[in-house]
Length: 390
Image 1 (tube, rainbow, N blue to C red):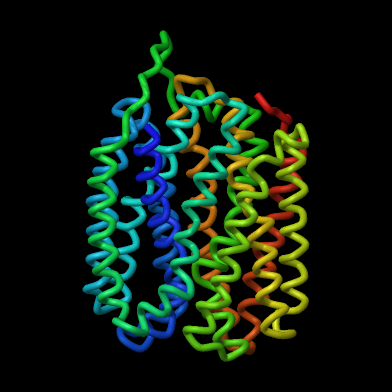
Image 2: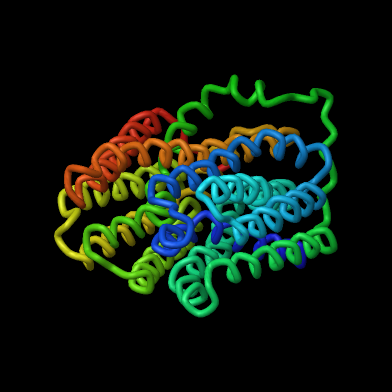
C-alpha cells in the first residue's frame, strides 16, 4: 500500500501542475495561437468544472470498483491524452478541449488516496495524512512555476506538454501495478449521494469549501500571470519566480494546517481563523493592487499560505460521513472545493473582460474584490457548523 500511495502522490503532483501551469504560458500562447487571458480563464474554468463534475462518478467508482482501476484508467486516457492534445493545439478551442480531458484524468487521483486513508487509517489521523499528501503533491505547483518557464524557454511549450503526456501515461501504469484496493465495506443500506445531501451538518461546511480554495487556486493557476504582466510589466521568467514564491507558500500552509486540529483540539476554529486571515489578505491586495511588485507577491503568498485549509475542511466534513459512503462523501466535498474554482474562473474571466478598458489595474481590483466578498460569505455560514475531531 505504501508503494501505491507514493505513486498516487506522483499522480497528484501532475494534478497540481495541470491546474497551475497556464499562468506561465500566458505570453507564449498569446503569441503562438492567439489565446488571450479571457480564453485561458475559460479553459482553466473548464478544467476545474470538469474535475468537479467527475467527482460524482468517481465517488461511485471508488465505493464500487476501488481506487486502483478508477485512478489508473482515467489518468491514462484523460491526463495522457489531454496533454498530448494540448501539445498539438493551434487555437484557443483546442486548449479548452485539452483542459477538459486533463480535468477528467486528474479527477480521481487525490480522492483515491483519501479513500484509502479513510478506510485504512484511524479517523483522527485523516487531516494529517490528507495534508501530507496534499503538501507533497503540491510540488507540482512549484514545477508549474519557474521550472516550467525555463523548460518552455529551452525547448518550447509543445515539447514540454508532449513530455508531460508521456509522464502521465507512465504514472497511470504505475498506479495499476502498485495500488491495492481496501476491502469493501459491507452494509445493509446501500446509500446514495442524496443521503449525504440530506445531512444539515454538511451544509454549514460546503459553502466555505466552495470558496476557500478558489482565491489561491485561481491566482496561482492563472491570474497571477496576466496581473503581474499588465500592472508591473513582468516577463515570463519573472512571473515564474513570483508564482514559485506563491506555490511554496501554499505548500508551507498545507503542512502548517495539517496537525493543527489535533494540537489545538478544534477543526472549526483552525479553519475559520486561517480563512479569516486569508480574507484580510485579499482585502489588502485590493487596496494595494498597484503599490509595488513585492508587496503584491507577498500578499499573494499570504493568500496562498492561509488558503491551504483544504485538508482540514475535508476532515471536518469527513467526520459526518458514514463509512459505507466514504467514497461519495469525500468526492462530494471535493466537488465543492474544485467546482468553486471553476465557477469563479468563469466569473473572473467576465470581470476581466468587463473592466479591461478602465485601466491596467481595474480588472484585477474587481477580481480580488470578488474573491474577498465570496470568502466573507462562506465564513459567516461556516460559523454555524459543529466542531468535530471524530
